[in-house]
Image 1 (cartoon, rainbow, N blue to C red):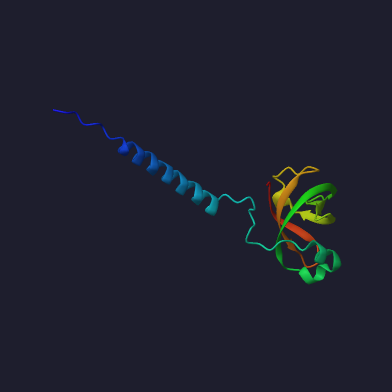
Image 2: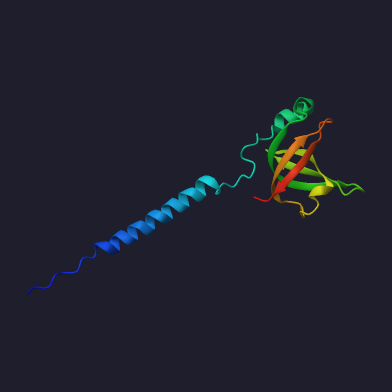
Length: 130
């Protein structure tokens, strides 16, 4: 009686299924959680419009990607006024005391969620590192 050669197709099926599951998981990560911008649903901050007329932007919320230029002032209630650079322009940014847990240093690139207050000042409502 002749012996049958063993079939190796079940091994290829298992490897193919494993690769398929990994591809599915990687695709889900990229689509659902792999983006770098934490505020991707918020409008970008219009730096040029702000510098021309801040009053037209009052009450709105924006995302701002900027590099910290320097600390301009620290108030007694622990708010910080920073100078940040975005799109080649310097703008003032007020960081309220509720965000003091983050150590902000000169030269850092940060993602800010900002609001323009009634006086036309840019106020950070959230800060994240890229």
